[in-house]
Length: 490
Ligand code: HEM
Ligand SMILES: *[C@@H]1O[C@H](CO)[C@@H](O)[C@H](O)[C@H]1NC(C)=O
Image (cartoon, rainbow, N blue to C red):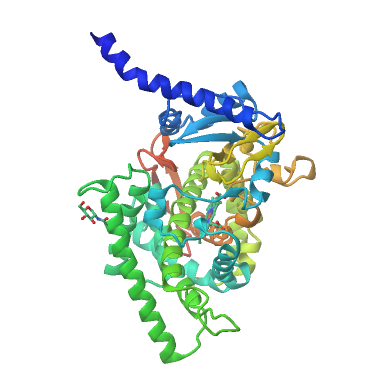
């Protein structure tokens, strides 16, 4: 009986499998004048493919091994089936270069439809060509070093306030949730110009609801996560629209003022020839969403790993401490950090960079294939997707000898300096993360304040983290902290 039931369930599955197996063959036979092949590998069970397998591996922090196993089995290029779409996995610096320099007519940036519903159609990740260049230029005009230079002091104040409110007076804290709170507050304050208070508190909750829906099943029925997520988007949208109107009024009243925050700078941006706004309100809303999503978890993960590492590696800790004490020595009590101070934190930034190498917050990225692509001896068919994983390049022993060893100085010497497209934590090419400078300022300022004011010790021996899809410490990384007697910060 059970066999019968199984067989009747299996039958359509088998025929789909057979169909899928033959499709590439059919495709090969009809392919014009070319003898190129579809990459090796299996597409797995129809629709499901390897989706559950990779998600399970990531949840138990075996995502790297999962990809390594593929490369061992099939080499640097292979096919699989992820999240309902046939996919080609690419590995290595040459592949990274290909992806990040490939024409947008061949490889497009497209998020899954469910993510797009929540983030909006006008966000930078969805745009291409002139549209992408226009919106990206608008964001970069605020996020570039020359502008951000003026914001180091404000970043410092925001971090001081955070330490005062959440660290001061405590013996034990949980690093990961606190770092999330910090990056959220920093984005609200420096990028959105939203003060502390009820509006910010409402937003945290709403953004969390919105983010949750992106990794849920996209079923829009009452009480589903996806539905809650869409509702959160509506509410966030009306808050941002209101914010835009307030800021516009303020601008009209006091005329031209210095760039107060990202939203203000986007509103003020006018097209020289037509005097109309460069970005519509819709553009601004969708990109504010993106900035929150792209800047919030990534930076908090980097900070969490750096703090963990400093607790575990006494030598690195001492080096960082020395560098930071040197900078404090040259400053008056309570004086804020400046851009020039950050430039002196060379070793600290190497520590952060090495941490990004070993634990890149973005685990993998996708592109959609718009036309058949010839890649080496293979063909990547139109309609498929391409996926790559920075961690695979970062753990390649041909590029980084002893890849599991934490060595902040490996980037220093010419001999061990990695070739282009080997450090992929921020992506590359015209799509490279425009927030990397912002993340650098935030990370350095936080580590400076922390190491001057506190000593810390991990509470647990084992701090397990899984990927969901970003790394999550199950217990939040609890740690014992002690305020330094000599602390000049508080
Ligand atoms: C340690 C922190 C960060 C890491 C590791 C990181 C990583 C990345 C990566 C890997 C990409 C490219 C993804 C791809 O090519 O598919 C990206 C894009 C992006 N990031 Fe970041 N990011 C960080 C912080 C930030 C911050 C703080 C902001 C905003 C202030 C930001 C805004 C963006 C935006 C807008 C894009 C899209 C760029 C485009 O498509 O043109 N990121 N980020
Ligand atoms: C949530 O589900 C309800 C009931 O199906 C629907 O009326 C509503 O439009 C959904 N919300 C959103 C924001 O799509």
